[in-house]
Image 1 (tube, rainbow over the protein chains, first blue to last red):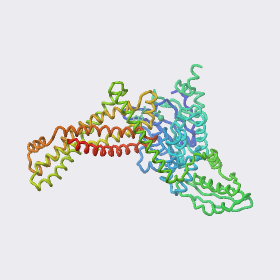
Image 2 (spheres, protein in one colour):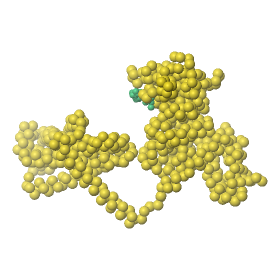
Image 3 (cartoon, rainbow over the protein chains, first blue to last red):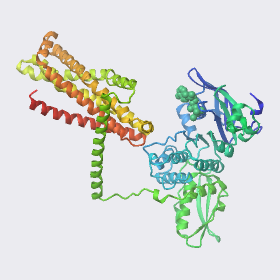
Image 4 (cartoon, helix red, strand yellow):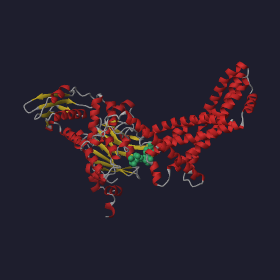
Amino acid sequence: MTDSCHEPTLQPGEAPHIEVRDLTMAFGDFVLQRDLSFSIPRNSIFVIMGGSGCGKSTLLRHILGLLDPAAGSVLLDGSRISGLEADERQAIMSRFGVLYQSGALWSSMTLAENVSLPLEEYTELDAAEIREIAILKLAMVGLKGFEDYYPAEVSGGMQKRAGLARAIALDPEILCIDEPSAGLDPISSKRLDDLIQELRDSLDTTVVMVTHELPSIYAIGTDSIFLDAETRTMIASGPPNWLRDHCDHPTVRTFMTRGEGEDG
Amino acid sequence: MTGPRIEATRGPEGLTLTASGQWDIEVATPDAQAVERAVTSLGPGDVLLYDTADLEKWDSGLLALLLRLESIASDRGAKVDRRGLPDGAGRLLALAESSPAREDARRSEEKAPVVDRVGTAALDAIDEAEESVTFLGETTRALGRFLTGRSRYRKRDLWLLVQQAGAGALGIVSLVSFLLGAILAFVGAVQLQQFGATIYVANLVGVAMARDMGALMTAIVMSGRSGAAYAAQLGSMKVNQETDALVTLGISPVEFLVVPRVLALSSMMPLLTLYSVLMGIAGGALVGMAMLDLSLTTYWNQTLGALSITGLVGGLFKALVYGVLIALAGCREGMRCGGSASAVGDAATAAVVSSIVAIISAAGVFAWVFYVLGI
Ligand SMILES: Nc1ncnc2c1ncn2[C@@H]1O[C@H](COP(=O)(O)OP(=O)(O)O)[C@@H](O)[C@H]1O
Ligand SMILES: [Mg+2]
């Protein structure tokens, strides 16, 4: 570990929104990552970086409490969220909004119904109000007029945006996003970045995002960690722009400059 | 915690909407009818203002409500002044309005007139029939290529399919056939006991299983087991664009996916049917021994005397045809599957329904042809 690759962003005395302590992730005997420790500040856009297959999506699933740690723990506002009973977990899940890597829209429901389902499950609103909110959320992501389309009838980028509308249906406290720009053109992906930033600013959301897109990492990321597939641990943490300028770990350098800093 | 409230007051500057308390998405929004009436009374030149000094927390429910009230106000020609809203709320409302609605995107709700719908249904039926014939033609041609050794497929896949359609189905076929043989024997025994001709139970079970019931029951079991599986496999490959990936490689999905399935199922069906006939006879024998005090050898000899080679071969031939029909129905429904996961479920359902219809129709045709031929 080189100190030049670790820059704490949490102010002294500031309580983290989410804290990961000595987390080891494993599938059976196969250890994916060990000894991860980091804090996600409130209202930050926290980026998880690393090569394909190093365990970024798996880390997200641990943060969501969907997988139990092999060792260590994940704390939300200071209390453990792993290994909870089903009903305790249910209460916590409504504080999270998730956009899955593949969109994961329910294909037998229209876009509006997709956004409505979490509202029907978790709120006491009546059908008309739910529909109104669903339309509002779809409008926020630029899908006004597409409420009654089925997922298979719209493009991949639109499915991603509809997935985001579903993720923010309950005004979540924490928004987890897995590779939002995968498969999107630069313009759509810029729009998505703006949208995420806007949602963070206006709803006071904490955003945890897995992405490879350097432009969006630098544009909206306020804090980040870097997972390494070879050493199977976290090799860098800090604001992305700071890491680009200071971190001298070769893997991180290559990633953050797309290899241009190496031979240029 | 103070509950969410909204009210309207008229002042010199215009109509002021005062939102206060804690608005939380999980709590029902307050009744806004009075406010809505007040907003409806606005006219051109009026102004709609906001006062959110006592608003502790706001949510999307408030935003959706405000959006509705604002659209009523602007329909009446009133102006909206959003300066009184919290920063974030104003920005989110602006965001929701920033992307124009795609008017052409909205679905037309109106239903077409009856004549239209009948016409469309008829045209669809013709298209579908045409597609079916095309599919049949493609499959036949691909089978031809297979027989001449020019077909592209993976031997391993074919072998796996043969295993699944053959050995994999033994359990369920045993169970169904054994019980069917026993039921036939039981029903027959009750009738034949009246004439004291109980030994003919063996003839009844043996002939029925060999000529018709063995093939028919095996076919119905296999349409639920393999036909549905083929539709689901091919359907999800379609959804994942795996079939497109084959086409772009220059490999025909019919050759690569359909032909091995047709071959696997149609070669295994006669074998399964032969097995089913034996299990049926065993079921009949059990009833014969337990209920009618027949000995196993008597029962077996009586069965052998009743069975004819032509009858058995006819039964196995029917099984072969049923196998082809089931595999074709399954693969065809899979190949025309739409682009979503629910479409895969629909394809599996359609595969089972159409293969059972095909099996029963074929059984009817066979019964007539065999009668005319005197077999
Ligand atoms: N349920 C699982 N069981 C076993 N291994 C898994 C499972 N899910 C993921 N993996 C493995 O974990 C590794 C990391 O996966 P993932 O977190 O999806 O990577 P990425 O960083 O690309 O998102 C991969 O090698 C994958 O094969
Ligand atoms: Mg991933």
